[in-house]
Length: 500
Image 1 (cartoon, rainbow, N blue to C red):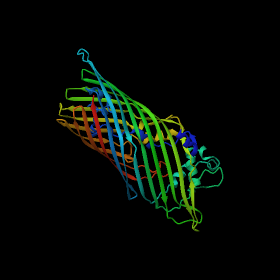
Image 2 (cartoon, one colour):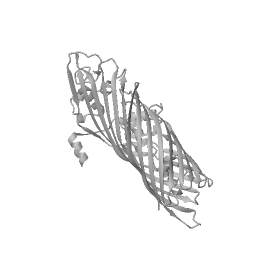
Image 3 (cartoon, rainbow, N blue to C red):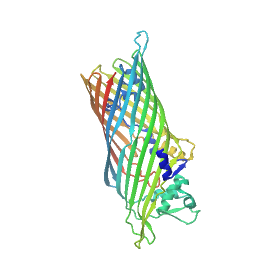
Image 4 (cartoon, rainbow, N blue to C red):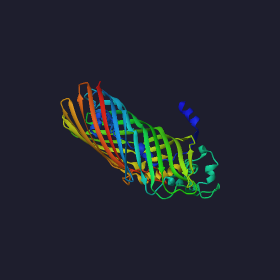
């Protein structure tokens, strides 16, 4: 009720579609490494190991490895630091967050009849925060060539001036709204001052050397609740399945500022501006997983698992405002405020993320430890916004197919036990999902941890470090300059497990 009242007060519009981008699809297609401390300490290489609550997220057959009932809860502290380089100017920002990372349990039912080969059924339920969106990025520097005027011009050119000036803001399409901001904020001017005009020019003084700042603050999560069932045949073959329910809640606030000191004209031109954008995306999805683990020998295990596409139903809400200052050579200065005070609420749409295959192997040294390796592959170019015949989605789906590619991920983990103490380590590599390998680069991650078995209770601690570079434009069209971002993520996870 509060939400509906808020929208009524600020204004409400319902449109066919928001201008989705490739990065929007990728946000929900990618999974961060989350889960129990043992799982994270070994970099998630559990596809053939099983016997861990988070192993079920890789291979659902892993619950049949359990011999006793087990429940657990995990908490994480995540710190991410983003170092930005924008045309030689270095800036930095960081974000720290504490979250409930994982919780769940597995219950094992055994058949003690020696004549029955199918001797075990395990049922599990898990919750995982698969992606923590809390992040801050600040970039600043002097752009020698391009102004943000290109963004507004790219939307305005081709739109009749009468569409912008003669219709209420809430009745405009997203493209027309962007043109509206540029026109009402005096960033762009029509070539001819009549309703049929479709050509526009910039009102930002030429000359380059535009000082620019871009701030991005994101909050939210992507979570998954999994319902698992698995069975084993003579403790040699294990089969399992998951049904997954996904929930996403994402908020991004961005603020772009531009200032220039180029010579003033006799007419009013823009000397500085601030363009604010707020995006709120929420919704839910469904996926399933199938998996198998086989004991080749008592020591050697192999695993194969499949994770289906995830089908999301998503909703977008967008709020925008623009503030500009115009000046002329006579010394006149005017502050211009373009704030419709409207929340655009768009029709729901479907996002289909790609499926995923994982091949795994593990060698278990009795009760002394193990070494495991997982290889996963996922084609991000198969992501799709639906309905695919929607004119608003054709362009972005073509960009997804052209810009994104098949992605390979390698995870290696090891564990060594000294009585009740376990020492763990791991390495993870995830290739870039982009064809150009620059928009988002490769990810390298190292992890380590330890655990102690108190008998019926286990306490595990893990630390992981991940490093990735990226260069995403501040805007997707018209003005696509962006900063080089060097992101470093540190995570500490604590897990408490109880055997029942």
